[in-house]
Length: 160
Image 1: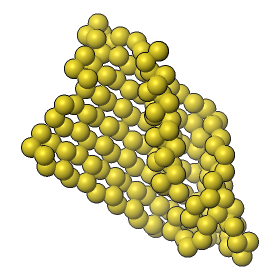
Image 2 (image 1 turned 135 degrees about the vertical axis):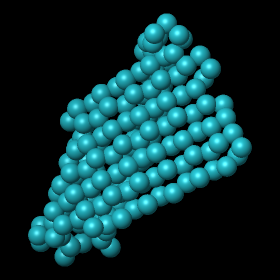
Image 3 (image 1 turned 90 degrees about the vertical axis):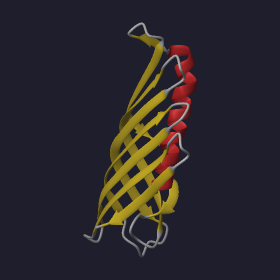
Image 4 (image 1 turned 180 degrees about the vertical axis):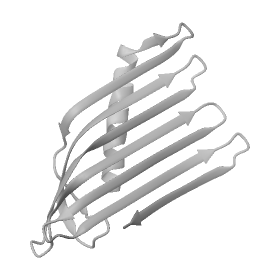
């Protein structure tokens, strides 16, 4: 599910960057361009993925609010951030497994220039099953590269 959320954020980001070219505003007269997009009660079509911290697949529906913000300066340096929060419904493909409902929040931030880049993201999930069970999951992702070529990255996902 986290891969799908990341993909959804990427699709929204790409769409926003395309829209950015036509709706940019100059910030502070320094040639920087900014773009902000907000969305409310967005519902994506259901998709199938594994239920986090469980060993079965479900049809998952997300409804969320969010904001995406981008800045590009004259040098081509780029900053982006986005947050989505909302509800999750997971209906198992195998009816012998519990269904789950709950909330999620995801955030990403990116900063790039001609020598360095850094990407961060977090994902938090709290679900309650039809059988009374609960799922609490959190993921933190970081990737960076410096002018020296040093690249550092990690992806920490935990249940509980």
